[in-house]
Image (cartoon, rainbow over all chains, first blue to last red):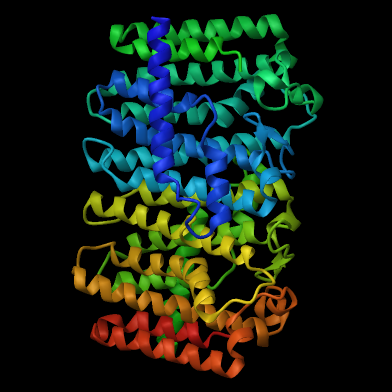
Length: 297
Length: 297
């Protein structure tokens, strides 16, 4: 099963890479520098966790794999834009991302700003330019869902909440609130948009899936905090140990490593319990969840 | 007619203000600072030229005025996000906008960055959350149109092209290329999205309207350059004379004041010629065009 999962993962990652490559404007297209920077920020890196979730949820919903690729790519573009902006000097001021200099270091701050802006726009362009659901009303609701997940009451809001609380002590519920927005919302969108690529699942099933996605989103962040505390910069591809250095509250700083690890396992257990109700159709989602929990980078 | 236009304008501006006020998250909504900054950047200012165009085009298409208000608001949010980001230190580094300190001065750079990001997202949320066209396929195409107009081959691309050419001498066609993207694309989107709020206009009429919108977009920028060269900071509500100071190519720097003024009038003439084919139904569009050309701020 593991070998099978690895080849499925590689196929999905290649499909996303190809699709993004085809949809990002070429470097021979004016303005050159912006298009270079957009491609630099998106292509050739990343685990593509969100697209993998979109593919896996699409498989559960028996959706066309081409549709799942588009929604996965759109969610990945939102994620990529957020990384470019979060790395900028006025935010986290980071110089390393996916083992390469960050966008504003490789190019310049103004270009990084416009790169993030344009990647966000491209995500919405992708979601509106071809048929992605069995009916156009559902497609409109998918766009709404991604917008809500990304905006001031989703991902960007979580980042703002984070900034508002640097140096402060957060309670566990506050930390959870932050991460439900900062990372959780987009992971949830990846799952739900993948599932909406067909009308196969009924309302009850979609609600269960949404529940699952919340567990996975939190688990992802707990593991991220563990990796930041335990890994080295070389394995991580981004600056390790930054959370502690910046006095940022994390699951590790609040719970300690052992309890944080236990929490991740509990969340995986909760997520799996929901997936079991879907039987074999949820196999890929189960594997992606396991990959998220056990990853080393 | 002028008094009538003034009261129509005031009504439209009030409708946009009310709608934006109702849709921007309240300042009692976490994260507080981000929501304060979003409201600061959007409410209580601006001529709302783009919404006026959306309302006027909606009137031409006999569209529901509530739909035109939503698309006008969405286009205005994209415009507002671009101002917040363009004013930042790594871009134009401006401190005054609409007679108030710019967003990063009033708040801070990180908040301004997230504010622009979240305003863009909200624009797409607005376009996807309620019925805005006679059929959902048209609504999807409107979202696509706004995305194309805003992204790296529209507004953001124009801004990047501008940055790439600071201090260089542009030819008139290059300057036109820049402005067709930087300001023209969004103005065109305002007109076309307003018109698409109903299925009343046929394809030929929509193409004519698009042609009109291109003329207006260029005229808007020529007048902007004239105002920057002629007006004072007090009337303009933003720092005047910055173009010359920053050695930026403008219609005034390339053509001189008299020829730039003549170009604006010629563009108005071309725009009116198209509108005349629509007869009285285009009255508001004619008035808004006249307002754009004759404005003093």
